Length: 377
Image (cartoon, rainbow, N blue to C red; front, side):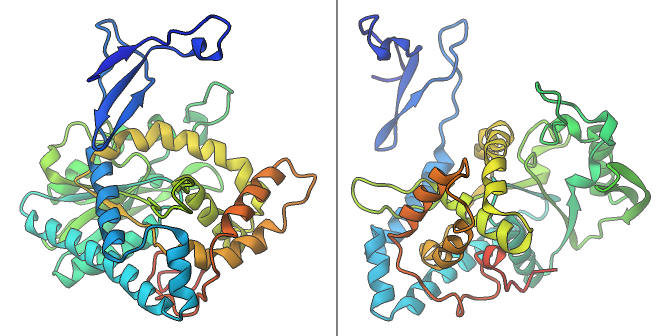
């Protein structure tokens, strides 16, 4: 049908008549249904998810090479006593990809001065950054982290959402003018006094941090706005290397039942919140809708801006996460408004044969959620 705009033509008493205009866009081996608003010319500009599709395709080809398609295929590996073989291959694949990304940055070093990393919640950004930094240092380049959080405006200056609450996910919650000027100065090799934000008081501290980039150093910036072109609009794009990271879990239960990647990230977050942040699953579930809204508003729409996309998912991870997740979910009582979520996740986890976590490498992305990471501060 090409980029065809279609109006749902059904009787008025049919629910389908409520559907607005939409487009069917042929893409890859299927198509995309686009429900976004149509402009005056009758067409809504749409960025095809080429890099996302390529990342999925790369993972699918890798699974095909291992003759893995469904969850029972992984369960068979574990039941047959070959879980270490599976674990080693999965971890080696990620290490190779991180090494390849570092090599690409080194090859572009004459132009690249800043690495920008973004991705949705529970993608494993912290561990990925540390492992990438290690690979860059192996190549003689020292990454210097710069936290966007330190550029938050004082609480009273923070914009509010439509409900009157502080909108910390808004780009305008950052002191963009100061941040943009300081990054320009750092790229030039000048010394700057970067701010330090005090999250207890909600105000910028009187203390600052002195920073200057040396010839063998590169700036490393991570945050939900890192891929947004409006973050650093007046600096040449050639100076940036942009990385998007997400957990794109691709194993399906069977030919009819897929596993949403969002569910995997929510399980990761729930386990980490319960084990290390003092937050019970009800609190995690209460926050999840707002987390998702922030991702849709500030993360997903800019994913195609990246130079490279990294899939942080590990094909064995739900097998390892199952015992931790089940222990957390047991804390959700029958009178909880999230009891249905508990039941859904319990059902999902029941398809995965538990796997011992003891032999997971201490630099694995999964360690960020279950504990024992060498990168824990």
